[in-house]
Length: 507
Image (cartoon, rainbow, N blue to C red; front, side):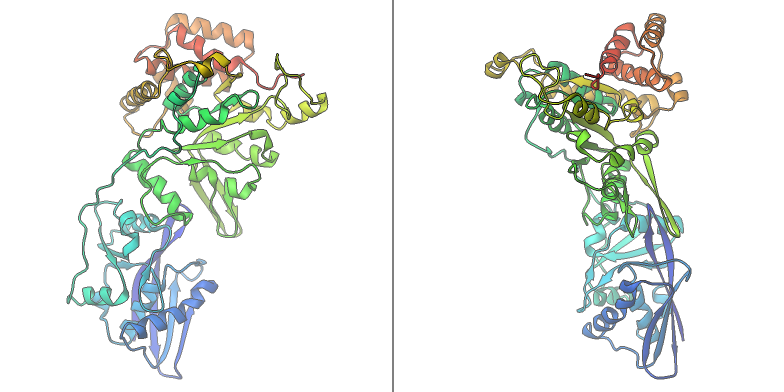
């Protein structure tokens, strides 16, 4: 007798459908699984046998062979426990082949038959929808994530016995037609702009960066508030759109970080001792790294020169292409990495080079070696450089100042600018920072005076082509904040102020 049950496994940012084929023949009782499965797949034999018996079913007393097709595709994880068990129940004449026809099943089995959640469930549902599969059955804990994908029937099963009763029409599983996702912006920290005294220029620059998703570098002496500003800015992130919500949750599910929906934009802060693989992604299973986990959010690198040079240089391609391709033997996967970079640094190892009040204790060689950790190509991919100076003591002791750029005001400016970008690009997740050159030319709308100013600045500052267009992108965001359709000279002038300062001036 033969059986066939449909399933799927995540494969990078996508998924691949698997046909779990079963065969029962005469011979000594034996249960074998073939089809290029790893050790986890091989161990599923014991989980499946115990789950079937402990759920009140009988395990066939015959020679059973289960094939995972296509056989040439390497398979890993516990995704196929449930379809293997259903295939065995068909071979044991406890289920009919028609009971599982045009349905897809996924889930890990515990020894008592309960279904445990698996990572990458969104990938699997998307693959099933693409193949026009009518129904998908997932572990109950995976149901919230799975229901992010619409126009496909999805059921959540707590255990294999409940699933069996549903398939036989005895007791139907609870079916959720719609899933309401509450989008909240829970603060990453309790720090907001109102809590930070002074630093008006840095607050203004961060507001612009958040409004257009521009990469920004804050530099200055220790204790000037660079880290506090970055964390305060993270609380200005707007709620993700539905497509962004799916992609954010999808990445975090693939990494095995959550079985629930991720309702907020990520704010990732990897330690400076993190390895290149943990930042970029990879490993034996080519899992997503920090730059992908920061997708549609912020990657915050505090004291960026302290990170390994190889780690910093590996950011070149994702900063430009907003994705990362990872190649391994027999596999190549591509993950999205459309993040906004916020980085901080001191001017030298001790932090006081150029300070008018405190002498620097570093040698010239130490300063040069420290500054060389950020190469020209990396600096070229950063849109804005902001010097964060020491806070004036009078600002620390002053009372609440109504003229200060406050948190609510900055949030309103960011939302207004994002609204203009949504209308201009007719898309909810396109920003000024990632416009192509052609798109930028079509939407920049520079006035004649602004073009003249930019031409003079390009010549006098010897700007590269990349920097030329980055200034226009920042100026476009400044104009959006002011609800201006045309980029005027004052917008170009402010954008130039954030670009012309060099945080790595030689001693």
